[in-house]
Length: 126
Image (cartoon, rainbow, N blue to C red; front, side, top):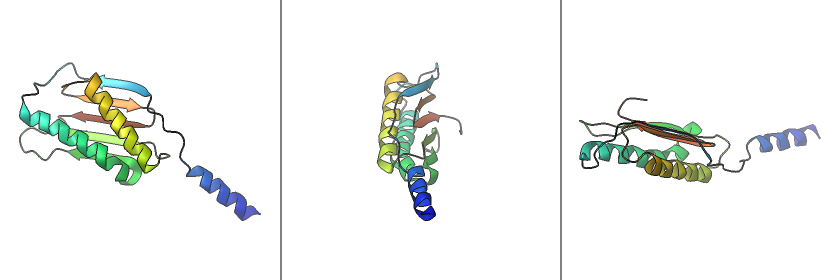
């Protein structure tokens, strides 16, 4: 009987809760970059793509990245709540990216903290 209780308790610990993509905080720099400034625009898109696709498959749902371009670099940092499933983390990353694109368009620095995940980028190592 005790083994059954332990097994049920462990299963409960690793069961996903409902995904919550409610926006908790927004951080956008006052400075914007000109989208025609190709190098930084490409760096930002690279780290956003990378975080959106890799975070859910990275151990601990915690990921840091850097654009591979040699002259103008963007750095990214993202994480998901450990109780989420892989697909829920993917969904949360997509939501965070959408918030960045709509709330901080062409900002040099941007970060979104949602209830179950966060994503941000900067020209400085995070």
